Length: 190
Image 1 (cartoon, rainbow, N blue to C red):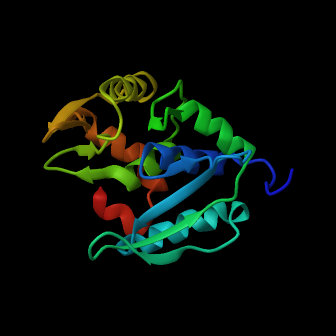
Image 2 (image 1 turned 90 degrees about the horizontal axis):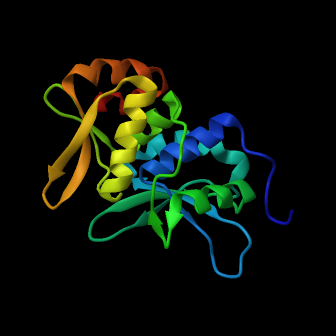
């Protein structure tokens, strides 16, 4: 299949899906057949990027690299190879280059990666920075959390955008669900 590799494992699909919900970005280059994933975080999250790399390394030709970002930001990133299963995810999660939420089965690893990418702790609960999704997609995520795990959440206005706030009565359930998948270097978020 050219520059593709074998089928993705369930763990890899979960990590990739959690990354798409968070800071990951799928792209298709014009005139190329398949999509690839970009993982790009601050250098301060090097250990986290290295963890993702270790789980996805059979999809990657080059290890993560440091690069200068905007201003003083130093980023640490890698790209996967193109892969047909990533193309399937691209077609499900993107509409005219905007991320959307398709019908989706959330599992604890997906939630943990999503939280490690975009979550934070507040006084007695957690936020997930979903400002990159439209309100319809955010409401779908709220419904998915409630239906599958009885985790109650709501939209919370953050400046001009909305994000998901886990309700206090669901915060401990959410933490228990994801904690075993959150790497030690990211547990400060819990």
